[in-house]
Length: 391
Length: 62
Ligand SMILES: Cc1cc2nc3c(=O)[nH]c(=O)nc-3n(C[C@H](O)[C@H](O)[C@H](O)COP(=O)(O)OP(=O)(O)OC[C@H]3O[C@@H](n4cnc5c(N)ncnc54)[C@H](O)[C@@H]3O)c2cc1C
Ligand code: SF4
Image (cartoon, rainbow over all chains, first blue to last red; front, top):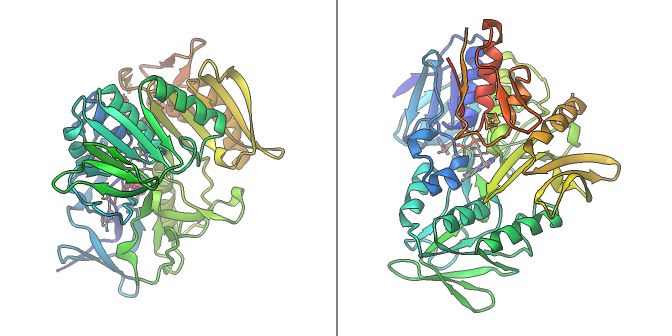
């Protein structure tokens, strides 16, 4: 079956939705079609590890408002399985073939599940979709034991939510501190202490070698030989870009869909762009290195920017100020810029002891980022300044 | 005139709205979020942009 869609968006989530909205805002009157592997209309993911697990929001609350004027043809519940650049066609799992004039790739990332023994035993979870959250939530009964593999943001957020719901929580990581890839050591320490005060146990410097159990998971075995008993296991050791359906298409796939400065995919015939968690592009203000940002604000902004670049054939470089947040217990973290590049931090307001601070992150004589802990309002000023520095 | 409401039970003080529409959303001296509840028609686009930038989907514009 052949359906013609002039502007085709693959990935029905934040980047895809904001792309469609940007097209309409730019007065694009042609057809827009959006393909989504999930059966759901676009919804908001960050609450999945927070409000949804806590029960303070329900899955229905997460739907993004969608204006009637958006006038999109939705193809939901069927993943794209192939891209033919010469024929300008995308094939779906259900056999449909959609042709396009312009294509935006926004298929995000998929949690990485290491090939460990028993990784597929019931009770072993990952968390990316609303369906994942429902399944995890259903198992999270008070007094059950959850082992969380990976002390990154999602792992730590789930640890906080699970603990608040009365579960016994242990977090395992091969690094020596939580959120080590992003946070400076002193801030990791604040989070570690806060979690431990609430009763979360950490095991650092260990790797998981196997999962135990046959009908249901019973524990995880570590490289030390020891087994930690658990009724539920969450694997949260990062994700991989969802590029499987693009293999062999001719696009350049290296840790994502590789794009130029304005988010157009290399080898994409100038008709294809990528946005959100899946897009790898050179941020001109941050040197020639191409990188990917796996955060909410970028998905929203890049979706819109990439759609406009495709629609208008413009080369405007996409140079956002990266930003993200995380909520764990009473700690609210906000970050702008690239704090992971910092060599040192300077606390310019508040203090580590008060767990309320603003920290400037420096590399040499360059301020590469700013982090606020429980002081989000103070970040507004920096945000405006740093955004101007990027223009 | 467009009416703006923020569900303060949802707001996590991310400040995205303040950044996008500083004339309509701001933090006061106590770091509380304040906002204009009725904005002129010519500010509609800006407050709608702020609503879209809010990760908590806390802002409604009618
Ligand atoms: C639990 C959790 C908590 C988070 N918390 C925060 C936070 O606090 N702060 C923050 O800044 N960010 C957070 N994030 C990250 C943020 O949600 C993502 O950056 C954002 O969702 C990325 O949007 P996207 O549109 O690029 O991709 P996604 O939201 O991943 O959407 C991609 C979509 O494409 C679909 N898809 C995949 N393959 C195919 C295919 N072949 N065909 C069709 N469709 C396909 C997927 O089903 C999915 O719906 C969190 C993410 C998770 C999972
Ligand atoms: S963007 Fe949303 S969550 Fe953030 S301060 Fe504004 S209303 Fe609150």
